Image (cartoon, rainbow, N blue to C red):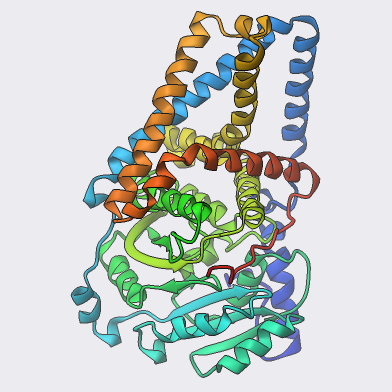
Length: 483
């Protein structure tokens, strides 16, 4: 780790392992407490939210209609703003130059001696069904074995996964690193622990069910060599191998096709902070040491790290290389995963908004506003959707006067435009994304996307509730469900 890390000595010694575990859990919050999500709300943030809630309640009690109009207008402005920004990013992402492309020939032409040393961290817990395929995928990577280290980060009490990994066979490249049991039981804690045992100049993470492009590491090395020195991270694209398993996996696949093929490249072209994916982000080890690695208390440690990279003056590139994953085919499992993501987005927004002025200076005005749109706006818009759907249902069923009063002309027409044009725009972007990624079989998923939005709203409400009740709880996503 960095110079002020307390971890030093023989990695095989009990003292080193104990120090590594303590640093994995407490390192960021002790060295940079303002960057740690171990405390969900700073006092001033909690008090501000409570004051806003009290004002809303008082307004509803004494000035019901004006308060409802004001809230509706604020939400409508948020909808319109989010829609315009998403369309802007999408149009920028349509430009082929917005994503880095390295051909197979260019990747294989790199001489082995010029390649950087690489460490792949693979955190897994209770994943015996997929670990054999994982090890096979790691061995399929085309990279010099003498420069590659693959660490399977397995919890020391996860006997079933450890046994499955040993049965699949480990060697000098793929090895098991047992992570001592300690709270919080999160992926970033395991990655922080593994970082102390890593030897690579470049660090990347793959999930247990991942099957990366075999040339991805070589493409990343070529990208780092070609990009400016302030490039700290290269994010590869993610897609699913079971996108046609059922309607849920089709919705999820269309969602990813839009996000990784157009929105993230659009963010890269706009110099805005890029919320990293949970896997296939390739990071310079020196930058990880500089910015404090992962936050073990943040349940979307990837998004948080992406913002810290941008805030620290570094850049992230998006690479045209795909890692295949397994899309959630079970609705309950999907909601568990998505609610964790939404909760983590809100965690990340709260952490970085502890110093709003410094964040504004670090990201710039556009980056600051887009950060708020992505990190806070994404889950809040999804949650508020449910409220407006119920309002619309109430109007259809009974046409109560109070709903009519809440939508005067200056609110009604922007809201109507947002409803019609916004929903049509999202469906259009999904269709384009599926066409450009040659996923024509997802046509039904694009047309029925509003049903998917209902699930997203449920997950957002659940994630927001969990932020208050249990902010650092990591809801496990189960894999191996694809047929």
